[in-house]
Image (tube, rainbow, N blue to C red; front, side, top):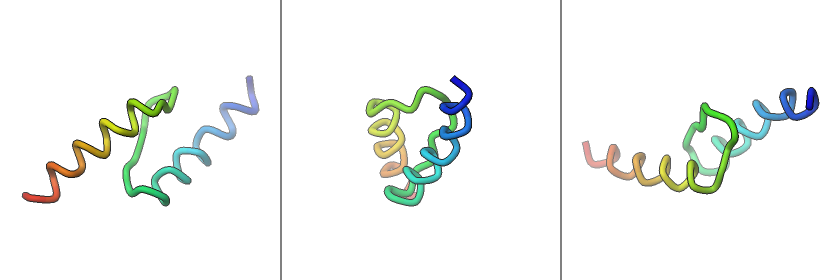
Length: 46
């Protein structure tokens, strides 16, 4: 379990670097990533 806690920030940073959205809550799921991407698209037009 400790290894997962240590890896979580690295995985979150890799996702941010790859697609430009930040996921702050664990667990990081595909649904959370899609939601963050959709919310980010709405903010681009502002």
